[in-house]
Image (cartoon, rainbow, N blue to C red; front, side, top):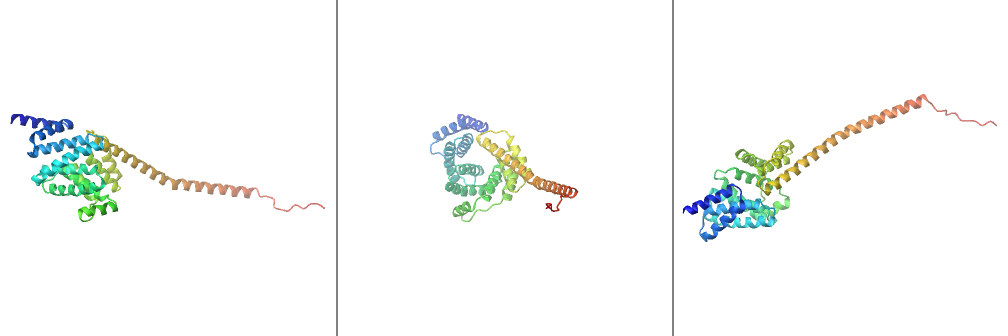
Amino acid sequence: MAASSEIFAQLDDFLNAYEGDKAYNLAKTLLEEAGEKVDTNLYLCFMHACYIVSNCSTNEIKRKTVLDEAYGYGKKIFELEPNNREVLKWCAIITGSLAEVATMKEKIALGHEFKNYLDKAAENEPDSSIFHMRGRFSYQIANLSWLERTAASVVFGAPPYATIENALSDLLRAEELNPGQIDNQLYIAKCYLDQGDRINASKYLTNVIYSHAVDEIDVEQQNEARKLIENIIKEQSQELITLKMPEEITMKTRKAKDNTKLEDTSEESNPEDTNDTVKPE
């Protein structure tokens, strides 16, 4: 029993230090030793380890493989403890992460499952991660194309609906509870961009860029933030050019009129001889 407690303490240490591979290997060994016995805490630790490994990888196939593993264990413990707050949270995290690397057909089915986990989790004193996931989900739903919304309605039973305002409200709540998270601030910025608020968008994008990245997902999101900032700068530059153009046109018009007046004045002061010349006979 003492050894088991020590091993679990070590597993927690690996997870807290974001050492995904070490946590994954240790949890995998413990799962093999446990056999068919279901241990909720061990399953949650394994799901957490898979999440870290996925986030630290640049290989999309590897990401999907470890998330698939975690997803399978999540289904098992959800069946046994459907009202457990941590189970709901980690099932939502893994399902949502898996949806991001899935095919469109899988994405829609996983999105429906993800929404069910979120709705149940929101009933049990949601923490910042739940608000973030719900806000992110609302943002994605609000930006679905007509075709995607029609396809999703087959799974959801009706066309899924959410607004940017819904998304922003949840994301700001998540920021309030756990400030400075890269993924949350990125989506806050995206919401502000959709609302045409470049000032607030730029503020959050800058925060993202200058935050400390802990994994590959953070690096990807920082790169996305840089591109969005660049787009804002380009749009603002184009608007300045557009604003200056009428000024330049007016100046050119005035200059042309002034030149015309000068020409007219010159002609009046130097009249040409218009009399016909008669040849002497």
